[in-house]
Length: 264
Ligand code: MF3
Ligand code: CO
Ligand code: CO
View: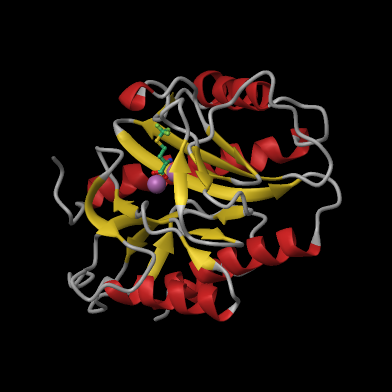
């Protein structure tokens, strides 16, 4: 078990792993068109991770997960399994979740993509999910209690009449894929640990257009909304710095400046 506070040499490796995970999301965008199967998307990402980046997929074989990435389309909340029979079509929204291991350290990030023209509701849901992640990232700095992250996410989501999934949370990350602490996306004052410089964890809110309840399918992985409403998720891996945070999985095409989060 690695410690909750990372050393300088661990941080250096985590920066590389984080960047690499982000690069997979940047790379895959141009392939996402109607008629591609989620299996083909998986294969392209797998080959890029393994052959171009000389890294390892953290998902493949994780507790038996059968593929290299998670692809969660429309009412799938998370852990969607790529499948050759799942063909993307105009109007779909999907989350691609990339987790990799490089030099023994993990990077974990996900975002939403749109296939062609999507509904106003889909766009609004994804926007609110991404805003909730950004708002929480703006809070991250030493001295802040962890529950503040969940509080600001829940407030923003519920103000917009959407709901937060409670069953899955963000997590510490390092040598292990999932480490302490649990990072809840709703307010729970028992979540009272205080952020310190050198902690690295993910924030990854899952937001539903309808009710918050979810159901796991017979394949033991795919999680869907119980009411079959749309769901959206964004995830970053973040390092607590002296004055704020560094987003280790920042992508070049993000519309908001990384500087906003590291104040000094
Ligand atoms: N990437 C997910 C997370 O953000 C975990 C996926 S586990 C898998 O924590 F086995 F489904 F890949
Ligand atoms: Co994660
Ligand atoms: Co992830």
